[in-house]
Length: 270
Image (cartoon, rainbow, N blue to C red; front, top):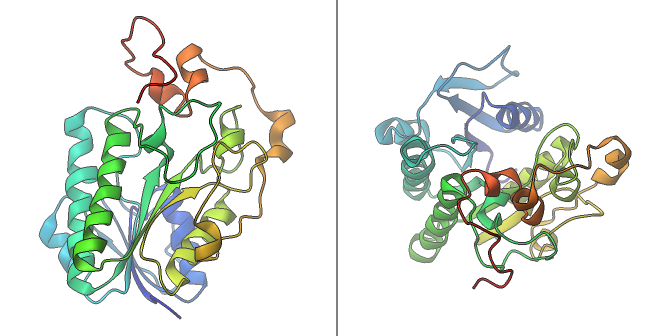
C-alpha cells in the first residue's frame, strides 16, 4: 500500500473523524492529532496525540517517519487575520517543512473560498484565477502557493483539495453546486494517497453534481471518480439566498461578510 503511515491533523473535527475512521479501516497506520480531544472512542489501531500545528517542534516530532500528511488542522471559518494566521499560515508552513524533512507527500484541505469571488454564472477549472473572499480564503491560497514552491524547489508532492461543502447532505441552493459527500471525500483522499505520481495539484473537492460550478482537469489523472450527486436532494433544499452579493458569487456568504463596496463590482474585474 502506498504511503501507509499517515499523520492526520485536525482529526477531532467533523471531516477529520470521517477520514480517521475510513483510513484506519483500510489498513493505514494513522497518527491522529488535534488541538482538542478526539470525541468518542478511537478506531482500532489509531494513535491520538494533542498537537497544535502552530508549534513547529511539535509538528516535526509528530511527523517523524511518516509517508504522508493529511492536513485538515486549520481554522475553518472566516475570522480576523490574527486568528487565522497561526494555524492556517504558520501551521501550513510547519506541515510542509515536516513533509520535506520526511520526504512525505501532503494532502492539504484547501477550500472553494480560494475562488470565492468568481461569479456563479462561470464554470471554471482548477487553472482559473484565484479570487479569495476573505482572510480564510487567502490562507488557503497561501497553502496552495506554498505547496507549489515546495514541489518545484524540494520535490514535495501535494494535492490541495478545494473542498466545497462537505456535509451529510446539501442544505442550500449553493450547496447543490459544490457539495462533497463523505464517501466522495474518502474516495478523493484515497486517490491522492494512492496515485503513483501526484506532483503538485489543486483539485476540486466536490461530488459528481449536476449543477457543479467547476469542471476538473485532474480527477482522471489521480483516479478520482465521484459517485454522488447533490441533485437527489434538490427538492429538499432551501432555494432562497441571503442577499445579492452572496447570490452573485460562488463563495456565497463569505463574500458578503464585511463587504463594503457601495455597489456591485464589475463582472470583468481582472
